Image (cartoon, rainbow, N blue to C red; front, side, top):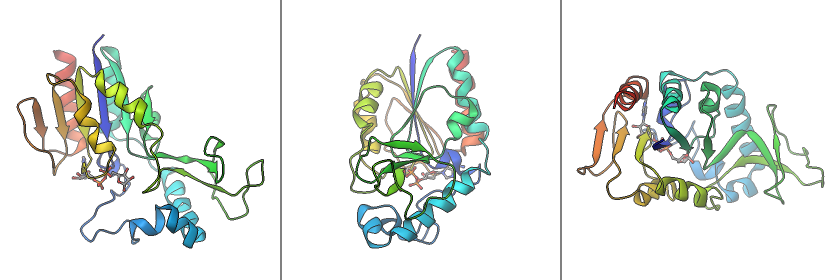
Length: 226
Ligand code: APR
């Protein structure tokens, strides 16, 4: 079976109602990204950070996967599929994709502030005073700016094995995730699906300048009929 690796970003979830990060004024839901998604932001104002992720978490419980997420599931009939997502939502899993790696963490999990391996499922609001079993404050299980990306080595080794790479709905601005494209073999074809694609054109690259809900089903149909 050929291997398809799929790198997704906020754009694939946009039509499910989850805002992307980099809107015109550079704010994220009205906040400076560093205020709500960095260790220094957490140190300065943990209540603001918890409130921010509580709102994102409760919103996630009200949205559903769209045709972009759903179309990817069909690829598993003919291919060995790995999804590497920068998204912290669980819409790929809700759609039914079986192999999803979250590079930047997961909204429906929390972890101990002092032991990053102590991770719990969490659907409620998280508050100051919610402690792990060792009496340490719990924090969102999110990889913040300036933190290591623990899943990166796995993501690199999977990307190196790709026979086809799909990139969907990402501004390719945030590293190390955006650097994954450098790890494919030189002959591996790449499809980039994004209404505002920011990538350097090359021979092996097919750009589909469309939204995920139309662009992804087109590429999936093409890959299933090859
Ligand atoms: N379908 C597909 N793509 C879309 C759609 C859509 N309906 N709407 C917007 N997009 C595209 C935009 O054109 C843009 O290229 O989605 C991309 C969103 O870019 P960002 O907001 O920068 O999101 P992303 O690339 O996922 O950000 C990476 O940055 O803030 C951090 O950790 C956070 O994982 C995130 C990382």
